Length: 274
Ligand code: KMH
Ligand code: ZN
Image 1 (cartoon, rainbow, N blue to C red):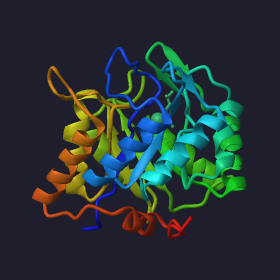
Image 2 (cartoon, rainbow, N blue to C red):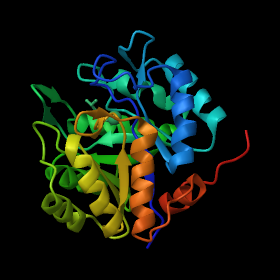
Image 3 (cartoon, protein in one colour):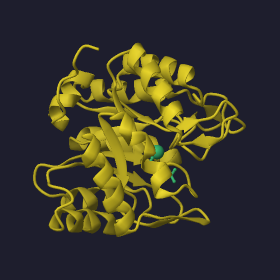
Image 4 (cartoon, rainbow, N blue to C red):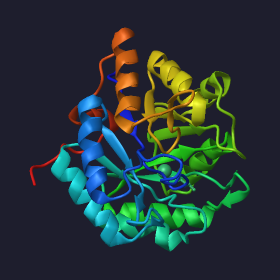
């Protein structure tokens, strides 16, 4: 089986330092987390940025500092969020792309998001994809709901994207598709030939869906953005969540991809020396 790509999503936009003290909310903490997660088996880091006070920000300067800190820490593939936080404009969400991270997320449709609406209309998706193309950034297509795969196919028909692509199934957001093995299997069946995928289960479904993805030949996203507990009543650190998936992979005889191997699997150019 193909080596397993483990993505760490260490901070996200929804949780606060009151929920867990382990959120790496500054560039320095993100760099340190990147280094520990690389050691534990991660090959991609999905980046949201916060201010020193922990508020969400898409400021280019802050993403620049995060990128630099992660680069100093090692060779992880850096994937910026373009989802940002509820209430941000599409322009704010896309702004950090001018720093040319290797990857960035593109959520493939509007969904309820708790009591809010996470808006990703076709004009928003086309605009963000246009910025990615302009800056040479590889998208990761975020699928929160079954219809989002159909939306991605429509973006291909319109000429804004070409398959194969890398997908990430974010399952268990309140207001979108529930996290279940059945849903995951159905979604994987819908993927066009040659596409790669990972799964990010929300909350307590992070671990079982990760284990299933390892066995199915998919890839895995873990981290505090999606789940803050290691087990009931015990807060996790990002590196612990990564290390647990790496151990599951080892038990199942599946090698864990280095960032170099992950770049090959995803069709990204090899990293050049700075
Ligand atoms: N914070 C959510 C509204 C992404 O990073 O691309 C969107 C999100 C998706 O986290
Ligand atoms: Zn995110």
